[in-house]
Image 1: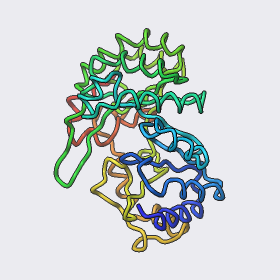
Image 2: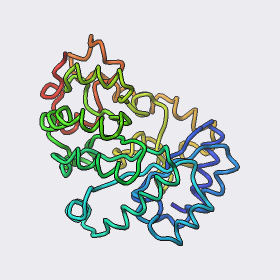
Image 3: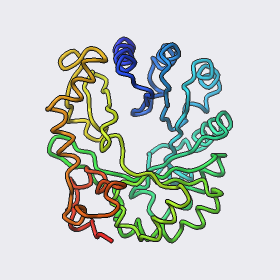
Length: 307
């Protein structure tokens, strides 16, 4: 994204009353305009979160420069727990520098939380990932779950873990992971809550360790692409609902566009009940029937069990 475009979207966001922006990629520390954009952010009052694998923070010079142009918060996302797993999953042999970068983040932000996406490459390594994050110095661990990405007519679900395998591994390992993190563990659920044992969900709720639904289901945010396209979700990168200069060019016109019938119809489609079992479910307001993108890869009736 050009800096001029980024600053224009930032202006629109401020006018629209946006309180927080996330810088995502790809890997945003590779963006040549990152420091200039962060400097511009300071005058807006908007909080920023840099979502990064922290690899570049291992470079002393880059780290020193970053500290002069920081974001409000760094969201560190890690991809492996060993040199072998990083090579297998990311095809790079840079585990030592990734670890160095992560440790710098957690030392710089003592209360920060490491996150990873539980997906097919990490099946049977849930505990390994949690223990590695703690070893890097994280305050806590956030576990997200893989969902499909949709490109034109192709649904890419190859990294999604089998639901039954996922549930068995995590529920079996949960208490040890909870102990390792001293209770500082949070699950960002993507699947309907009823795929999990009810007692497990109740335990997570009682300990404040669960988040459900997202900005897509709450209609509380969007994603700007490099060319000004507006997505409702970054996994729907091939399906923009609008575009800068065509559908909006100011904060007010963006708000108006979000309230338009065109966008409301998109949200209504996304928020439909995926299964008859959801209609009278006591926790539907909590889980929303799971991530809507799941149903591009699975039949709801094969996954949604109901309690």
